[in-house]
Structures are given as structure tokens and as C-alpha cells.
Amino acid sequence: MRIDILTVLPSLLESPFADSILKRAIEKGHVEVHVHNIRDYSESKHKQVDDYQYGGGAGMVLMAEPIAKCIDKLQTERKYDEIIYMTPDGKTLDQRDVNGFSLLKNLLIICGHYKGIDQRIRDEYVTREISIGDYVLSGGELAAAVLCDAIIRLIPGVLSDETSALTDSFQDDLLAPPVYTRPEEWRGRRVPDILLGGNHRDIENWRMDEALRRTRERRPDLLDEN
View (cartoon, one colour):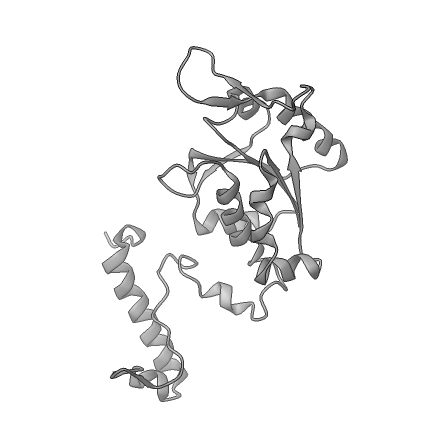
């Protein structure tokens, strides 16, 4: 998989890909991540990429032309399965979206900033608009990093135990059950006896029951029990 990310602040995206699972995924060739500075495509002497919005109002808007020039150049080199714009008014990201994205070959992600991007870029290029939650960040860079992390960990070979991703919260519309590790007792709290007994069928049944209990308590909206 290849992921191209367009941003006005590329330095914000250095750290997320420089450690842990994402770093190893890149080093092993499971994914390519390329960050493009939109300012490099500005024809302005001062590399301006934003301007005041028509109609007045507070906040600047990213201009259409620098973003379009960057996208046009990249599209001459490859075809993108999706062009994603990270925006608070997009569809809230869920695990089904992530699963689908992980099966694609080429993704292009646009990070908004200030008040966002000129609507004409959204109309002309964007195929998916994604939000990571009902709140507003200073820009789309952190949201893009969240999306990339969620996608990349699902690519075959990225996780040392690929079954781990299949038991994550939301994969089966349930929250994950509680997990425990050594020691068996910590500050008077014991690991549930059933997890120590070695009966795998009983353990799986307990995990399913706990997943259902936790989902009912914390995210009943995930359950369709009508």
C-alpha cells in the first residue's frame, strides 16, 4: 500500500511514523507513506497557500490551486483508490471504513487547516470525507495520523500476531473484553479463575459474555437487540 498525505505542516507528521508498529511497517516495505508540503506548490513569492474567505468571517481558507497542483502531479504517477479529506463534517470513522481502506492500494489524504480548504477542491477531487470524532482540531494532520495508524496495523504482515487485529474492539461490533497479565494477584485483585483454568472453550465463552456486557454498558448503540 502507498499513502500520500498533503499538508501545510509536514513536521506534525514526522513523529507518528517514526516509532513502533508504523515505523516497522514502513521499514519492512508493507506500506509507503509520503508527506507532501502544499507550500511547495504555491506560485506566491512567500509560498502563501491561504487567503480570506469570500463573504467575510473569521479564519483563513486553504486555496484551491496549490492543492490541485499537488494532486494533479501525483495523479500523473498513479491512480488513487480514494482521495480522502479529513474534516469535522465528514463521516465519523469506524472499523468498517478502516477495514475497507486497508484492502486498497493507493490512498491520498488531504489535511485541512485553519477554516478548511476551498470547497471546489472537495467537489473536484475528494471521494471520501472522514471525521475522527465530533470535535475540532487545529488541523487535519493528527486526524490523518489516526487514520493511517488504524489502516496500517491491518495490513498483512504488519502485526507479529495477525489474529490480534481480528479481536480488537469494533471488529465484530462489540467492545473488547477485559485482558490481564502477570501476576495472578495484584493489590488484592485477582485474575478471573476461568482464565487460569486452560479450558479454551470456556475462556472464549467468558470473553464473549464480557464483550457483550461491556458493550451494553458502554456502547449500547453498537447492539441491535430490537
